[in-house]
Length: 490
Image (cartoon, rainbow, N blue to C red; front, top):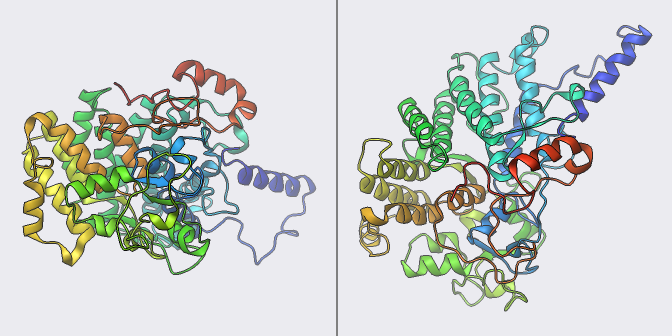
């Protein structure tokens, strides 16, 4: 459970050798005593890419993208009706094994440990500066923990990843986790030492400047999560992150890049082409909103149906009123085999600054930042097809033009558009702000009547970690999809 398999196995092997005193007799000279940290880093970053793009029933990315109605399911009308209640995080914690969504946290902890321990840090330095490896691993580890706590709320944190020292970790409060994440991102960014580049970093190619901007931007977005529950801390953390240097252009966007390889291809491509399932199309909620605004991003986001039209699939309607070919699947910019997935964008950072300016957290003009965010998103998605004239016309529309009275709603609605296929982020921002205004599925399958606000814990917690599960449900609330996480306040 929670990534202890690898450590336990290693411990058993060491014990067996020690008890029989065979020395090196049974140690193969052709096998590494420890996994190389470059491979561990690559494996963890692949998991990060998968977490942000996974589709299929209960997929880590598609489920929240369905909740915020960027997508609808068109074959099995279940996920948009919230059928899956319990989602498992065990493989994210767990040791490396089969499957692309396995073992990120234990792998990153191994990178940190091998580069810290005196007995192993010399060998680990083969794959880059010890400090640089630790810094990247800490940033990614904190990123994954935020991804998890935003979905489940209180989760095992301080007692997790302890191997055979603790098979039943307690759950930490989300507030305490957030407090530590801010510290982790700041300390990790300060740890880069200008030493040898890190092998295996397929995300940002061991570019310390880009990693520091990513870490500061993560702090910025996390700080805004506190806007309702702890605005004083949020304001202070936001200003500190901004001062440390966040993403400053689309060139800084952080993306996971897939390959023209069945072992590391875009999951939507695998669904649409390789398996020919075509389970998910753009939602009519999303398509109709973009059509109303004549949004130039729509032809990029959506592919025409077989009639050559862009048509969204009705949301959560059962039985399905049509087939996949009647609706618009995601466009090639999102669904091609090598199409990248966004982890953090300049537009996202600008929307955060626009909202912070409106809240009085930072100096700056909220209107200018809001319009700059829309422009950055359009430039990101349209590339050379971007037009200043089209942009000017777009932001002049009554439903887009900035007004102070509707600032939060306008910023939130446009952020929802810009965060297309960034499911967890779009869902988190909707939960925090209440925008855009969405109607739940007309026939939910989870026993509720509203759009989910959290994920229920994996069922293994009720048996393998029963005492701590009982404690967290007594503290946080009922383990269902409607108990709000700490920062999600009305």
